[in-house]
Length: 421
Ligand code: AMP
Ligand code: GLY
Image 1: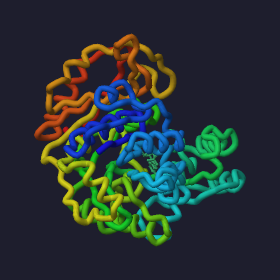
Image 2: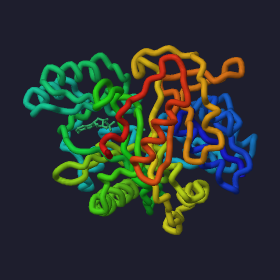
Image 3: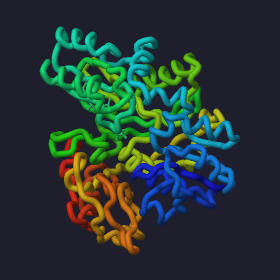
């Protein structure tokens, strides 16, 4: 079986690593991929938003299954293009990927179907939004409706900050059309948990839980990033919380989408906050999280191809999803200055240290090959994952492994997983 994976981050490196483990797979392509993925798969120099070129490639190369890792192509309708050409593809269609593509849509869906989430109002008129903010209780959360590279969420402690945020999103249009509509949401407090799930349109099967660390600096200070590190499972995701989520959030979401005529096949990533009133949805994503995938996928025991095919075929109820009874921690090595300004092109040393070590993974995110050498090529450069018998051991091993590699401007958080200690 030939598989094409679309994307170029640490998440896609983790997906390709899982795909390669399947005995059914004879060939893996990745478009556009990165230097690390290039060691496992044949890289295809087509960008993720070039749907027709990608579909033509899949047809010409007899690709049996395409897996879309990234949000932009899913929200843009890549699955519809592939399906219209008779190609098999894993991921939601455009009318379902809107679950991530429009926060206003997802909030309205949750309200309509009674799925627990923060109180909110949607605005497409900046004057109305301003009036609302002037009488709102602070802090408030402002969210650009559309995709914004994980940066379209502003937590505002004062009215002044909120009015500045409103200006940024709706008037200065910092996130372009994503700011045509803005969600103003009640501020919640609690612990965050990410639960990624597989869905076939009717059945939903949760994977093991994880927790991300979104802020750039230790102690959750600094700017929001794509994610600086993860651990899995989350000890805060107890049996009781899990039961509540399965009964009131997960299945309810899939059923709601089906009722709306937006059958969801693929990954639903539930960003949850465990509030005093119970778990509530912070956000939905329509794909694996990054770096959540880098701790969840190495722990999955199933053949990923079987699970993804069951999602496409509507037979997920027949899959017994299994995870190893251990733990994993991922520490992201970033370029100093991320997520704002940083330099690229520095040589990365020490990568060989990972070869032959079963419990350790070095997932490439922003890397490239230059004169036969690995160099930095992005904000998040590598995701260093280690598995251990428990979270404490996994954490200690992951931090140990961060010392094996080096590059100029290497930056990481030193408190990934501190919450579990
Ligand atoms: P999102 O992209 O919607 O997950 O938002 C990014 C981050 O902003 C989340 O991971 C939370 O840390 C924070 N956040 C989003 N919505 C809220 C909210 N209603 N209350 C408190 N924090 C929030
Ligand atoms: N790590 C959060 C995300 O992938 O959106």
